[in-house]
View 1: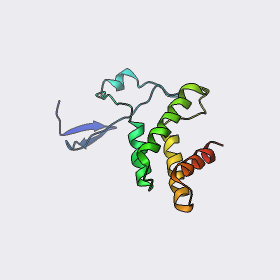
View 2: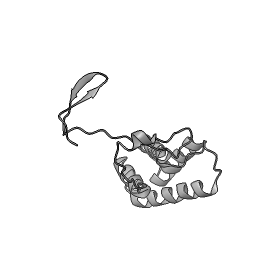
View 3: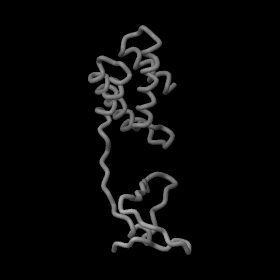
View 4: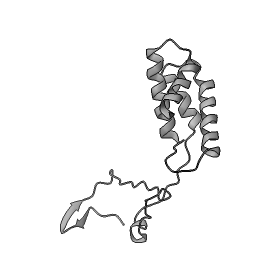
Length: 131
């Protein structure tokens, strides 16, 4: 149903067809609640996919100046995947994209400030971030 105006809290609001509202929900996380059904019916669901961590890692390493980014990205992603699968499942251990990104940014800063090889720089960043 298309309309030019709608009433909100006693005021008439003009609609702009070029404007949209989007809600991102992650109900699977601890402490998050489901959207109530009366609100859920007002929005259209969109399916999201898991991002390609290896590609993101490779691009970030290239942007931080690592020449061997492809090989290092593969190693980092295998390491994080194994850590996520085999180490403790406690909620305060984070082996997701946010943690990986933090390590890569720190590795870039270390690379700019030292003369170590790229692999050793990445290992130092891992040690410093997770110690």
